[in-house]
Image: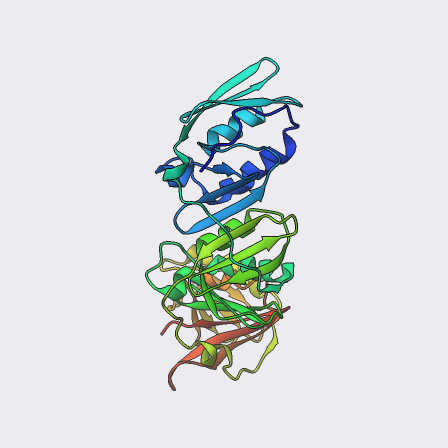
Length: 333
């Protein structure tokens, strides 16, 4: 591949620095070159860490793979104009007024070239909002596909931490895909709006209004059937007055992270005479829930059933609905 010109004319820093910062969404400060270096080629900045990749158009005509974090540091110190020169394959010089920095590079041939999927359909930023909302339940350190990924499917996205499940409606006709938590984190950390989507059997790409993009590898495993939990018949009522205040009041006194429901009370312990209680009119007797999981539904729940039928004939679970969201949470025995 022919190398690009060794030097460029001075340019304003804004668009180039924005591109570098965008690609940093999928890179790290430390790690292997694939995790820390950006590829600049064909007036495009791209990055690929083995799972996620990102791309952004740039005005600069250069062929190099500099350490992106250091390049961001250098560009942020530049004034209104700057220039850069490739001293050799391993060094890129940045100069602006009195400032000069040399950023280390690696051979571009050692960094895989990232490219997006072909666009399949238009989407709205409702999908990004849906992913952001449900991603609170997922973890990159989980042991199963359903706790480490978000299920994207026609009309909704679903997530779970193994005890509580969220489903958020986006209203788009999309394929069923399991996308990793890392993708959700990257999407959340940019204020750009998505407008197009592409995918194949192994990856999916979210495009933004300025033609930048983030791409993710997909999980090969499939989610288990979860609709029987979300579609559980429930007797939904407005949340009892004072419920959230009561939960916040008794939770610090719990020794096991659980809260216990009694007739008209929420308690930090199953037994009387220990811990804390809080009066809540209309609260049913019997349910036991993890306090932190309960707090996760606070921003969303408008109506709730604390004693919907559980997964077996002898159990119950919590079911709730809110604006564009619903969910279910397993109780404790």
